Length: 353
Ligand SMILES: Nc1ncnc2c1ncn2[C@@H]1O[C@H](COP(=O)(O)OP(=O)(O)OP(=O)(O)O)[C@@H](O)[C@H]1O
Ligand SMILES: [Mg+2]
Image 1 (cartoon, rainbow, N blue to C red):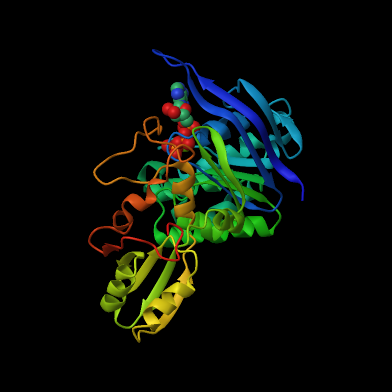
Image 2 (image 1 turned 30 degrees about the vertical axis):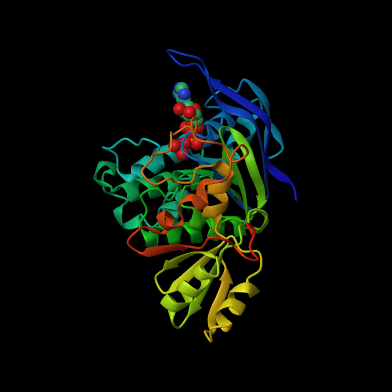
């Protein structure tokens, strides 16, 4: 597998008007292979857009190496730019042009045959609004227009910063299908998004960054496995009683809807044994490996009740220096209305025995 995108030791510092320079990228490494859909994840302000802008020659890096399609960038950008389609942050379009005219002008500027315009309008589901002015588009329609503009060149590498922003659930699914089609035809897709369930479903591999540094990378399944925190979902007939039994036996549990979520457990057999002893039989027992959990653990961005995390994580203990905050408030994650937290004293057979 060849790398379509390679970044090594990328450093980018912004000069601020007052105060000290802000290090946005701190020796960032990243690698994306051909034909993959790659999720580029990180909390707000962690450096995703800065990385993509630097890669596309919109910002100048302090140091580091970058290659796109095997060519060193920014030096070789003129040679590779026709093979790359990108949207970074929400692009601004001229409101008094129609969607069709907008794409036509972009096609002409990029030397793309004008027949592509109708093809991409169709692909993003905007064909029947193509003759309306862009200023009359909804947020999701503008987003679709942006994606259409990135697809014009039929690119080998498609870079999308927050493509699902503003899309309705059906639109998100359409976007997923569209990106999968792109990957199936051999294109490589890099997508940054905060919709982690979406990323988990759609991506083959991910890079997770925090404070301008890579904190995890690899196939989604490996990142999930490496950060598996022993969380299991249990369905059982008498939910209340089962919850009480597990809590009394020392498990950390959250009741959510018609299921119990057991946290921080080394061996799931312990659940069936604990319930079986009371004649309660497990109907369903499954590991919960959520990208969101891995993300929060790796970036130290877990929510705390009654507090807002500083946007740059500056005063928030980093996971490498402190215990991850996830377990401080398991009920908080599921929302106080939907879940009840019952926490035992000891976790027998669990990781914190
Ligand atoms: N033009 C700028 N001048 C000064 N600092 C900047 C500038 N652009 C970005 N930054 C800073 O660089 C850091 C990284 O920002 P960046 O936009 O790359 O984050 P991001 O990961 O894309 O965040 P988000 O998820 O919110 O889009 C932040 O601390 C941000 O404040
Ligand atoms: Mg951004």
